[in-house]
Length: 410
Image 1 (cartoon, one colour):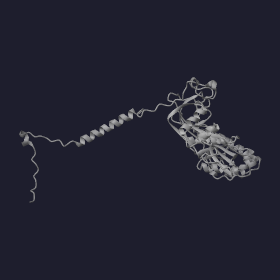
Image 2 (tube, rainbow, N blue to C red; image 1 turned 60 degrees about the horizontal axis):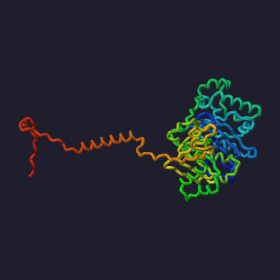
Image 3 (cartoon, helix red, strand yellow; image 1 turned 60 degrees about the vertical axis):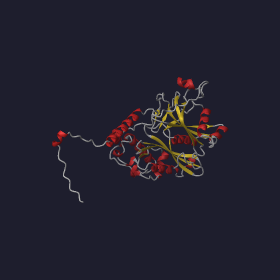
């Protein structure tokens, strides 16, 4: 399976394991196996993964009608098993079509299917009452449609499923939603742009300085127009993958589109704004206009994702994540930017002041100075001659006699 950095096959069939930015269970990471035929999406397998990577839940499996009976569903499910080789798997409840498909599917690792194992092995990851309800639904589908449905592999409890669910309900441990901390470092968010012809040529001209090209892009789109709808990640790769995923499902042609990933950090005097923290990303869905320092920009064409242009700024440029609605824009934002994100008359782009080389290092410098003084003192003591002791004439009789010396050989 290929990531966003590798060109998706436009001739045959390709599988792509990608992130899937939805609101899933807190702490769990949404993922998707996407089936492509001739560069067109024809099927997808959606699932979520526990933070420790040892459990996943299948949320949906779909293949376009014209591409069914080609083993695409089985190929996607096999890819899921291969991508998470040690995880418990919850396949959930099945519809009529899914029940018929499951009856034909040769499961690669049935010992990791939680329907085939007792709850004490997996109940910390999945709610046992929900799992038992899924099993009841699947059993009904199999019975009504005369399907075996791999029933022989399922674990037999010897008691009613609802009783088992109630017994193990307390073993479930919800995952903690930690996610990136916007105040802790830099984040990356993406935007798809259609640039004027002349600017597009400039952006891909490697003979020009990358920082100059990045600033021309920012001046074109407006310093206050960083994308409020973006999911802000800890890596530019994840930001580009978001854009590639959106591009796949966009019916518009990709010609003339540029994918841009912005690297930002909160401005020094900016309070941490209200945000949604997911397992691997942060979103500012109701942004009032968030002041940030733009520390870098990267861009690429969707047709050639392996060719990436990038610029880093030694002195970050002040910018802003656009407000979702102008009526909710903050006073700080409207004082600098107009409704289309451009600087107001009299406002000029600002750069962060160059950091003092010793700023914030007072404690480290003091500790190092003390260490150097101590080492210098030890060396001074070690270089002093051995002390000599003067003996007064009147005290000589009290001194020990020198040790006898052996005669020298002539």
